[in-house]
Image 1 (cartoon, one colour):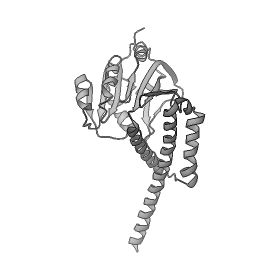
Image 2: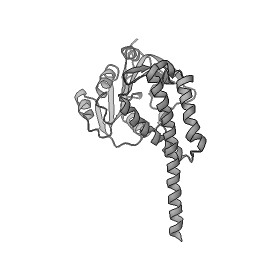
Image 3: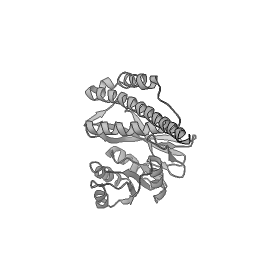
Image 4: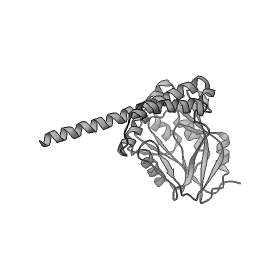
Length: 265
């Protein structure tokens, strides 16, 4: 069976020259349209998009959810394949999507497998990792203001798993990993701060230990060898950093409030 419904791929990008080309070339085998919302890349990403003839839209960063929803709204097709710029469809997944009979009331999940500094990770809580990425934009929207954007899907919709791997080339090297830790810890702290959550002693010191135990032992990171050990302790470090930043945000707010009171007198 050949798929009747046409699909628009939507990608957000910023300085992803290393991965954008294989990402787009795989999508061209499946999608009728590819939209890239680029937040003013300076590393050659834009040139590659133009070379491959995709629909390139320069777009100021609005946050993950808002930027992705904007891209969905600009597509000419209702069926959206939402792919990150560091993800590549496997040949098996390409064939599955080519022949998928898309149905209303359904969303479609892809089997994502992450590559960490050259090694595929099958544990640590990273795999299996089914991600709903194919959906009808009239029924499904991205939500979340900071780092953890999620899809808002009607509760009565059926989730269908699509055969084939979505290869996720997330971390190029150790420095790249640390930069992402800092970025996501900061965003996560801001998210908690906006909701009025605080960092107490337990969260500062006990939560990182729990995270390490969960990742390395319960999620069997130990089976991923050296990479599993590194991922586990860095995951714990990210939790510690998140709550440290959260504590600093509250301290800064307290200073501003005290300064404001002094000025009134």
